Image (cartoon, rainbow, N blue to C red; front, side, top):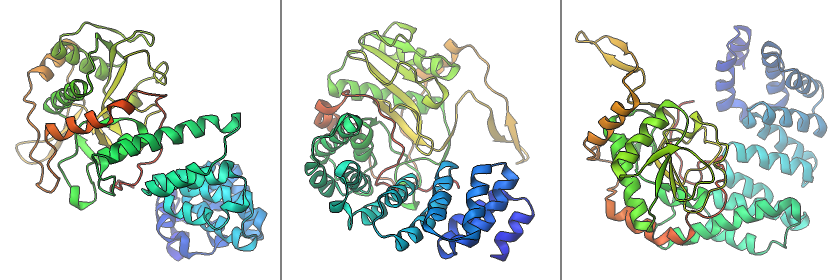
Length: 416
C-alpha cells in the first residue's frame, strides 16, 4: 500500500495502474478506491473520481457497482473485478452485478472466470443474455463442446440479439470445421484465429514460441522479405480455396499502396483504387489500424481482404480474410528504423522515401524463404497451411467481418 501511495503522490499514474494490476485483487476495494480517487483527480476523470470517492466513504453494492462500471468505462476493467465480486457476495446472483462482472472479465480476456461466475445462476436468469454469455465465454476460453451445448439450449432470439446469435453460430460452425484438421488447443493459433474471426493466419512467428509467444510477435521490425513471404502464402491460400481475384484494390495510405502494388505485380493483376462494390477484388492492407474501415465490414462477391501485419493487442475494426502475421508493435521496412552504428551506438535511420512503385518492386524481388527462427516453433510447411484452408474453405468468406476483441484461448506474452 505504501508503494502505491508513493506512486500516486509522485504523480506516476501509469506506474500506479501497473502496480494495481498485479496487486488490486489482494486489496480491499475501499483502498483501491481511495487510490483511484486521487489518480482520477490528476487525470481529470470526474466520473471515476466521484465513483471512487463514494466507494471510499461507503462500501455497499451500489457504490461497488458504480465504481466497477467507471473502471470498465475508463479502460481499467481489472479494477472492476474485485469490486463487483464483493458486491455479488452481498447480493448473490443479482443480474446487473453479474452482467457487469462478466463484462469486466471479458475485457480482461478472463473468459474461464466469466463461465465460472455465470454457471451457478444461468438457469435462473433470462437466457438472453445469460446463457448466450455462457456459451460465448466457454468458446473464448477454449471449451468448444461446452459452448456448443449451451448454444443448443438457447431459445430463438428476439431482434435485439439476432446479430449476436448469428455471430456465435458462425464461430461455432467455423470451429467445428477447423477441429477436423486442427487440434484447437491452447497452442493452435491458426485454428482459433479462424474459428473466432473467420481469418486465415498465413504465418506463425518462428520466435519465442515456447517462451510465451505461441506464434505471435510482440515487437517486430518488418522486412521486404517478410512482405514477399506473406504475399506468397496469400497466393497459396487463394489457390487452396480455389479463389481467383480479378484485380487488386488499393487502400489509401502509403504502406497499403506499396504492398498492394507489389501484390498486383506478383499476381499479374491490374491495380486500382479500392471500390467496396467491385466483385472479385483482392483488397490489400499493410495494417488495418492505419486505414479507414469504411466499406470493409461487408464484402462484395468474391472479394478477399488481406492484411499483412495484424495487431492482436489492438485489433482492427474489421477482421481480414487473410492475415499475414500477428504483432503487438511493427515497424514497416520503409519506416524509421533503429540500427546500430559501427561503434555499437543505437541510432535512428530515416524513413525510406523512395517512390511506392520502387519499394513494391523490391518486395517482389525479395527472397521469400522463411526465417529460421530460434528453433522452438513447430514446423509450418506450405502443405499444412494449404490443407487447413482446403478443410475450412466452405466456411471462409462468409458473413460480416466482425471485430474480434479477444486473443481467444491461445495466450501470448505482451508488453504492459
